[in-house]
Length: 376
Ligand code: GLU
Image (cartoon, rainbow, N blue to C red; front, side):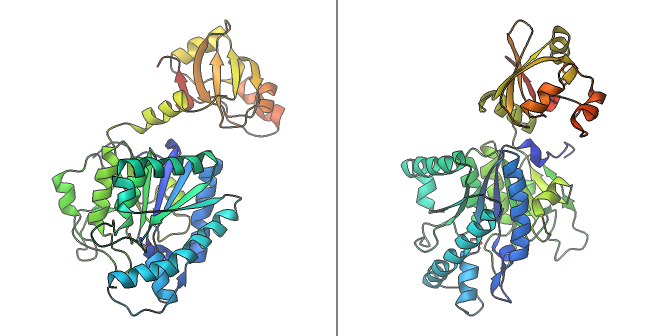
């Protein structure tokens, strides 16, 4: 288990699953608004950075039972269905308002097991989610608990989120949980339990570590999280389990907080580069000189000094085509400057950037990590 964990910025489409106990303060019988606001701020930042975000939010039953003041303990199916009917309204409104604070539109999608397991319904749900993302909305998904019966229900949102992630071809699933990852023994009962930062493959040994825990509010213990990991990684989606008991939990993962990564055999750099190469509409063109073209072929970044012309209207982070002096496409990449600034720094050395633009920008016009050679 020695491979280096990926970073959130490596991913293009991210599903964030939020557990009930993170969202609902069962003692006070209400949502944890301040924490949610910090999570939504992280989501908004990724969204601004052109990532597609899908939220799978639990909490309908927990919130409904708090509002209805139902007694503690396991609920009968019809009670949890009715509790979900009350809780889901409040949950959806909360997400819509929290995302709305950042100018992001939320779209509620309630799914049942049959919606993901029956091909026709699956394709239908997939295209709805695809359309919402195309509109730059954030789908907020939960199981349709009010109609799910015992025989046909997920019951836990870990596996549901994994299915949604694979359905939406997400490249990362983040499970925000009340635990910061997988341990080789249940940490609550065993003080010497070791945290596992990286699981390259879910083996029988990994499954055995999961045990059978779970809090009162959420049905998903580590077992359903490992099941989710199997669904996700088999379909090319990486998964990370991280603690939601901190403010800004997504930023915390980026800053190196303790968590467990489950890797899919496809390497994230490759999938990011696949995204750059294939699924973006290039917004502009950078024409470069022969020296820069040779440097790119050797694996270097593109520096402003090697750029001779800038065409198109693009913003920082947009995809551009990079052409050689003869006009042939050499590469595609994500540009570090908007078109106006890029035009001002063509043929300039990297240390002149600050004098020209008045800001300490990146020294590369397109960083090598954001660059894919044509035909690569
Ligand atoms: N769908 C359930 C709810 O919203 C949550 C299931 C789970 O806790 O994973 O209450």
